[in-house]
Image (cartoon, rainbow, N blue to C red):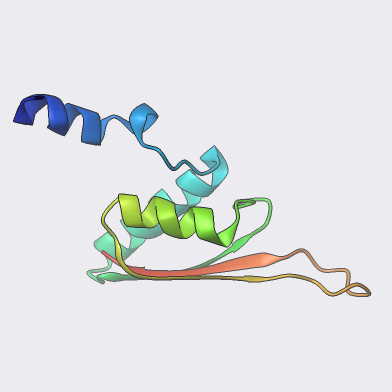
Length: 95
């Protein structure tokens, strides 16, 4: 059986977490969380362009859930066949 210290180090080691997102998405989420903390909010509501967060909705949701965030909602706006805009991902969660 592992000790509490070993379990804590495993939980805090980013490389050993099962769900990962792209580094661009991770940096964008970190920035959004820091801005929310600095402004005294406990809710993060951010819209990211595809270039900043190319990960699937389910992966983002699982990533946030494994990092103990609550009330997670992730939706993507995909362009239709004849539309020429880049898709966005709308992410809402509580700290």
